[in-house]
Image 1 (cartoon, rainbow, N blue to C red):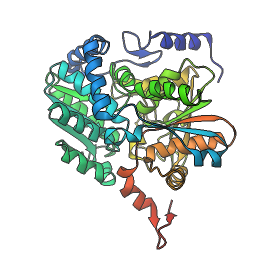
Image 2 (cartoon, helix red, strand yellow):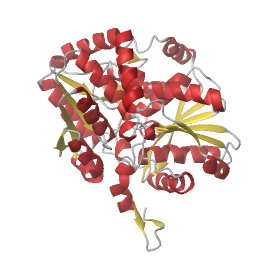
Image 3 (spheres, one colour):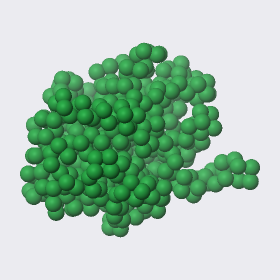
Image 4 (cartoon, rainbow, N blue to C red):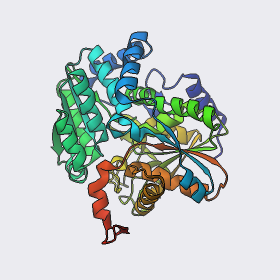
Length: 418
């Protein structure tokens, strides 16, 4: 994609730290589209983010928890068998090894500390794949805060292990049966809860979505992934030619990509859920198949909606990617041409999961499997490249889905049914 001078200037502003601007906009995306009753809470949170995130006290407290409780830094693994098979040098940034099993804990513990510093006495959260719900429940247990998690009924059924983990960690899990009964509906209900008590409640959004300052806040808390990865690869192998991450709302991807945005020779590629086809409603490939802007959950971004302007229900084998929008900074990065967005189908993701399991001894989350599938496809046309893949989470949570889509035959060999 050819970029204009205006687009180049916007990217330079992002790299200088001038975006998002005071209105929370990344060029044409972002902003604040929330009820007036929430504006005092949004303003208080914004002031707190700008004041506390750079403070030495907050950084000291967060870094202590990240090191002693989350288990950072996470490992950088050379995937030797995949490297040999793909014909590229493949490295994995192992967020699956973080406490609770995914990158979500980086954001959850950071926001929980922030909420406590700002005087919140109660936390609400939403979750799709369950990992953000588990991370929020764990962070709240760590800090002694009550936690309520909203989760779509469909996701509760297909992510049963994580639902039980949330209960064990002391959270209240509220099933959401309205709308599409998945992540979008869960976000709607969490926001309604927040509106009812914006003074005492803090809403821990799990991805880089929502009204400002959330996309900025989540990106800042998740950028530790990319900072660690950059330092680790510079020391042991050298910087990669391409970096891949799965994209739903986009928190793990923005956290991995952001520290590399200024490295113009490194390709950054986000992989969305291609689902079961290109038809609207059969996938969740917002950026790789959609080009319509609109407002969802408090921010302007690129969305999936029909000719009547109705937000479209989506499909993905992965609960965590099943979302009809994407964080506004991702829409911006596509707009300025810095990140390329592609997609992987359900069957491609399932095949990549099986390959990673059998060759590397790693069970990736279904979300992560999309990034693996996209990286493999790109590698076939770029042999000899050095590739970094964000391993956003582990696949224990996905066992109910895998039992449905990949049976086990009498010889204990995977038997794909997709």
